[in-house]
Length: 308
Image 1 (cartoon, rainbow, N blue to C red):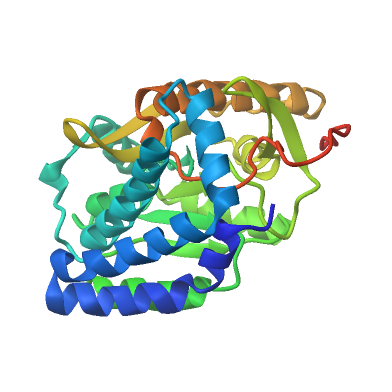
Image 2 (cartoon, helix red, strand yellow):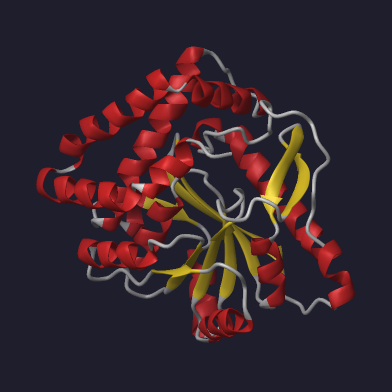
């Protein structure tokens, strides 16, 4: 699965720092040509990327000709620009229709947190930044990357009001679980992306039907959500035809699950998550950004391995 998304992430800290500087001093219209040229380069030079985009669009029920594949790439570029604008305070809370905002505030007032399962759909970073620029909600993003300290410093430089922190997690140890549990008890929120296997752990996954084919989903986010015994929601922020939108849908009420029932409950939670993700992919197909062999169309068929 090593492809464009992994290469992009390895250099993203330096690239984002440069883009922040250009955006701060020149605005969106100065940085936009740079972003679009980079995306155009990948579009022209990566035949595999175009093929995977076309395969996804077909599965989502959308037109999948070359023009639509290019528009899919352009949507990715626009999402990156929106991400920059949100962190720089150029996109305000009033610009985003977010029906779940009050629910988050109510949970925080009760010193209760929640687990928010997101996806590489739309612009979740934009949603986080807009909510946090109010200086009220505190969000913690769980990532499988060694660059969290660099990104934290970058976010500090972008806005004085950012309350988000990136937390690097490899394996879930008792100490990690205690740290995350304390944040939930303090009324903070945990965000995990749950639609892509982490680069360093490609063997622990659930294989489930998604948009008409078997796809691999990481075990970790769903298992962790149940272990923390907190409410679980599906969260997505994206640019729709009507403007910026953010959606939050309940997936699980946070009740304690006996150990013998965890796998069954975990799969049910995953099923609820997939239902919401499929709905959005079909409604806004150009907003899902996994430009790699998601369904394994280039790989020989083999028996899927699943975490127990």
